[in-house]
Image 1: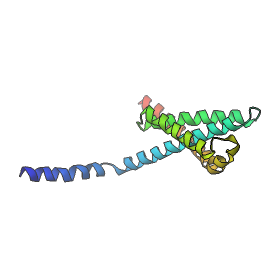
Image 2: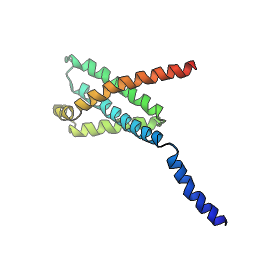
Image 3: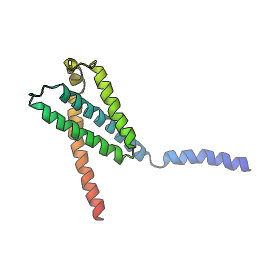
Image 4: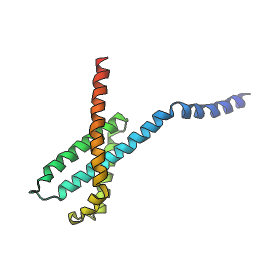
Length: 144
């Protein structure tokens, strides 16, 4: 009888955990992927700014965009209960990957521009809206 009860518990515990709230699991997975994209875009903007000449008018804007995107990636990671080490590691991995894509040479930066510019433009615009929504929700929950 004891074995039967343990067997039944083994069947129902994982099933109940999986059925607990699939929407939360899906949202968490999407947020994690979005955080990964923010990390990639932050690295993209950082490398792009680093490859531009000091006289280039866009350099300061892209540098500011890099810092802003890093901040958004950090905020989303913290919201999703990622450890700071994981967030920083992800940012470093993305940076290393992009540097590898250009073979460590700024003269090859068009490779990553062609690959990431459109996506990162979209991700950054969406990120602005997401952060604004979080701020509204945080203010709303603080007022309650």
